[in-house]
Length: 298
Image 1 (cartoon, rainbow, N blue to C red):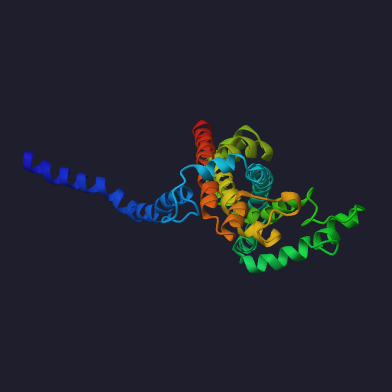
Image 2 (image 1 turned 45 degrees about the horizontal axis):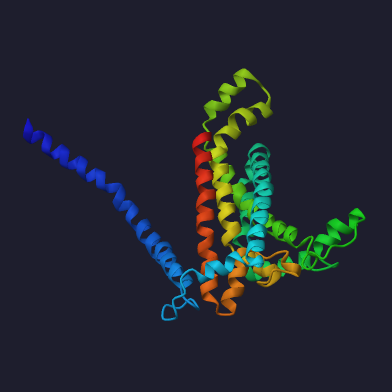
């Protein structure tokens, strides 16, 4: 009896280690491409010019940021930019996914590919496209939308009242289709039995969407919001193709990632690293809030 239980015990022990073996490549890449650069960034932020052999200055760069108005403006702009992107993209993507699932099922492959094209477009092509859309009075946005409505043309790239709006518009154009793809995949994963039960209670499609689709999609919508949050603070190409790495007129479009670029362009690696590291506690707090929200809604 004792001999027969030993092989089973050994088999269970082997199964217990199997998930860790599958996670090992991910953990190695996480250490190599996140933890090691993070430690290097902290080290750079504590030296005069960000180089290890330079003079150790401790928290001097962080003290400098506490007095830097442009640093706080970049954080404020980044939060407004990111929040506006989430508020526009998530409902729009949800509506598009519901529309595709309800009315254009035969054209799913073609429409899904079309929705993914903006997110897969190289930055060099984006620069040309955005120049055509936002460039002065002759830009497509003015010619097709603003002027036909009888409004004066808007200089999207130089007017400080509209620079941040231009950044939001370009990220909406780029990421709405990609987020629609995620939400559509989530919709396809909802068991049909839920809808069959809902039809027995009511025939209203709105009630089906509100009481079945939306609750089942909450984890997916939360993932989309987190994706856009990280993208808003980390993706550089969108701001660069519009403003060339500057903050625009009166720093109206200055984002934290753009401010880091400006510091590195003048070889101030210490301050650039301090800006990046200073955002870490803030991002952890926001992500913690999202995870807490996820537990409450799932």
